[in-house]
Image: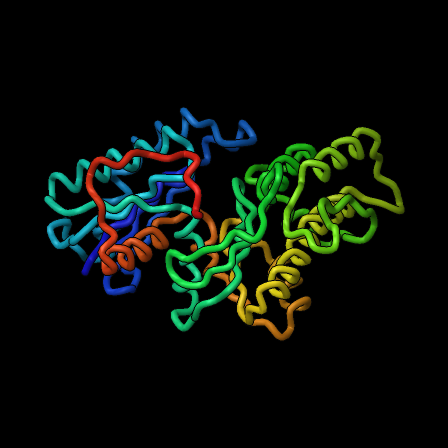
Length: 329
């Protein structure tokens, strides 16, 4: 079968074509308009999706060599995400499905991030532990099989990606914060200052990054560069505090579940420092990361999971709505 995936949960306008588990095209347009605001402006994001979505879908069809009449179904993100941006994508998908007389399948954005790891390695087998870490979510999941997911722990306040974004703003860096901090941390000493690691009690699988962000804010109020500490050292130390927390909680989750495989999903999965530290800390564990192009929001993961849902009979009706606070389990 041939399926179109559409993703508009935040500030990436994306479309992809999947056929028999193979991604034929994946087009992503990241909205640069938000950079000057230091974060996503929901109304602007919705307008950008409206302007771009038809073009992005058209480009995905051209790149794949697929005619729209060949599509068997459409998968579209219905949540979680920003209400207005989700509505733009869902409305477009429903209109196209009516015009082509094909089904449209609502997709959980979080679930799709997890299943992007099957694109990285089709031999991935259940069960496994997933660290889902992005701008909006930091969660640990035990994935037993499709539709059987156990939440092991999640953040009580800020997500890791949010901590990167807010930290970058405090440090006077660009947006998005993750790539900006990772770039500026290179060459810095990550041990020069120990920022707090939240909720590190022996058995805890929960996360907290609000205290870390506040600590950085107060630290920078009085910070002056010297021979003993540069701003690059501070940036590296801040990043290390986030990475240490994620790695330690992943180790605990693996010990609890006895799983032999872990996967990383979401935008922060692109962070090379995180990848390197996990490899060193978990030498006897199989660790999978999606391709960098599938770490951030994309439609390839939506179309791939959509085909799996379609083949298992999870199609549904056309009367679904958007769910900005949609949960995975």
